[in-house]
Image (cartoon, rainbow over all chains, first blue to last red; front, side, top):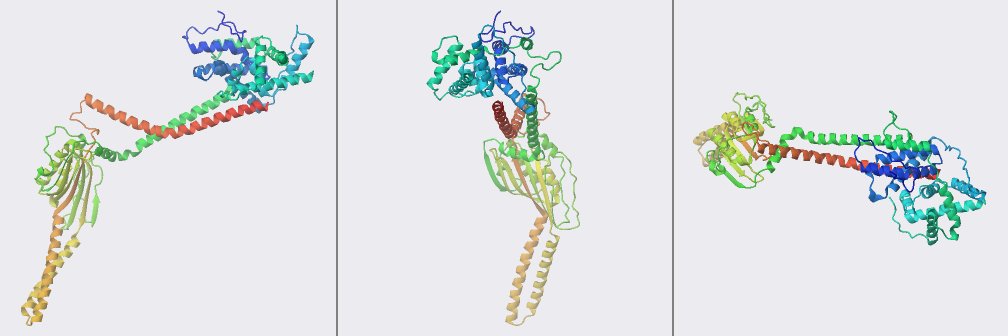
Length: 187
Length: 431
């Protein structure tokens, strides 16, 4: 049965629960949430931390925490997806704190992006955007990650960040404006 | 928690955001937003991809519901959760310590006044009487039971505590001290006190006693009648009495005058009444031998003076001498009368002891042993109610002890949460 999500299409297989375990609606909801959000959570965390290895750890930890707390989720306080990203955000920030205490940030060298079809102009623009994104503060980089990598709406973005929707929209606009100026400056 | 969206967003910003959303949805946008649209598309296309190995690991991890794999506790996220779990353990341990401390406090509060249990029982007894009130007061001789006590039927049961009190011996304090007091305390425990016999060396001793009894609210009359009977058998006097049957203050008070010669036996009988239990008993004595001797000597001197004055009066010749001697004789006779009255009063005090008897109605809920002590539904319900009352009391005390602790922990938890949230945000700003 194909129960893939519209947002994360990479997870298409059905995860089967052990036969000994009875029907658990909270588990089914979690499983569905995992399938629809795994790639988005990883992308968000990876962009925020700029460390693929740490992003894997934090993503795994976030899902494990969500699994442990799945029965405490209160739908009246927001959607499950925002709740999951809140957990992932806390885990990522804890990782940032831990790294700040332990050692300076050491990031893996970025993979070379292979551009097959893009022409040179597009490749240059892409590089410019990547450079501008890398220079953004973590707070603004997080907004980009939530919006464009996690595919969140402005309302969801506001719930995860704990701000009003208009405030989230303004923050996103300012970040985009900053990226636009940075890209134009490199031209 | 999401904030309430109160501030309206700038129209230009809103239009830009709409254009970005439209671009991501694959819809055409106005040329004014071409740059934003291009950046949005480039950002979206640069989404980090999940490494296949990690995706496979995560899938298997979720499939087994994060259960440890081959004894290994964790494969991912081995670093970050340690701190949280350590703090979680601390909080759990703190909670357990708080609960244990509250339990100890509750137990201490409950068990603390254990030695005063009898006094608690007596105070509750006063509040547990029936509501119908019949009050009578009398000043009568021992045989006049009609003065205050209502007629009562002969009960077929009595408390075991009352029976245990019967084993108490009369306490007679030593009489060679000027003032002595002894024997205050609950006597219903069943322990047998030794009988103290005062020395019979001819000294004059004034004795007294205070006896506090408890009885079932509906047996106050029976106890009063028993007291009257005992006083009558001892040839004593009920100087005054007050008997209240029923009501919240049910009880009786007696002031008795009992022959001192049989006081020990009479007190023993009063302590062994069928329907009453001894709560406390106080025996007192006062040696008045010196005072008695002084009064006797004063009387003898006054009589000797009067005899001498009478002889002088017989030999007097002048009117003045006669008048003076007659005046002195009147004074001497007045002294004799006064000294004689003092002597009589002292004799009465020595020969008759004043005994105060107080009877209190005990609580209806107090444990009462019915004859053979067989199990009945009524007794079971009574015991169950008692257990529930005690349990509710313990729970209330525990709650009172736990509330401030819980408040402190709640404040600590709230402060820790705020601090943690702030530090997380600071971590975001510092990168």
